[in-house]
Length: 227
Ligand SMILES: Nc1ncnc2c1ncn2[C@@H]1O[C@H](COP(=O)(O)OP(=O)(O)OP(=O)(O)O)[C@@H](O)[C@H]1O
Ligand SMILES: [Mg+2]
Image 1 (cartoon, rainbow, N blue to C red):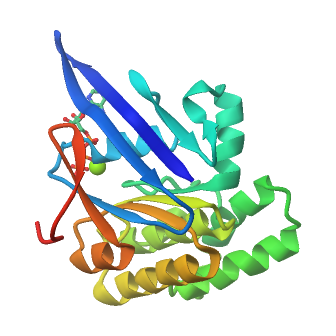
Image 2 (cartoon, rainbow, N blue to C red; image 1 turned 30 degrees about the vertical axis):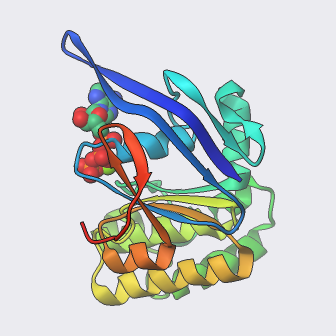
């Protein structure tokens, strides 16, 4: 489903090149999920960006559904990403000109679904995350947690094989975090969606399953999920 081998990434900082990922390996089969923890600056978002094909590693390979994405052109990568991946960024990245409903419909429209069915599916997901009263709001008229929930609905609406989430419940109160948790459980059970979730929320980590820690550029399984 999704796998990476010997992923290495460094960034230029001043005169130095600082290694952030130092040989990360992971492999998830269909229906498997993983939570990732690690201190601020340890490279969690950097890792998700590599897995989602938003940035390229210095060396190593990422494959998604059997395809080596590090070898794809940007255009082919975008097409694969739209079909197989959902992404919830640490910052929400909604389109400003569009309403919550339109933002959520976008992956379906890009995939060629009709407007009406896209609208119905998007509205149903927004309702599941408690936003049935906010369908026509633009991002500027939504709170931070509401934007995050729209981003979550959008990531899941096209039923992707794998969903990558970066602190999805970071801005949410207990009730909203709970509905996100239930949505994840539903997709895991019904569609065997694979989730890779960066989170410091112990309940979310426990729902997701195996907890891994990113430390000094290497990812390893944790015995317990308490930081
Ligand atoms: N484009 C970039 N150019 C230079 N340095 C970068 C770049 N992106 C990230 N870094 C550095 O890489 C390190 C890891 O950043 P990253 O955002 O992956 O951390 P993180 O684990 O997600 O942290 P947080 O928990 O705070 O979100 C940081 O020290 C950051 O300064
Ligand atoms: Mg981050």
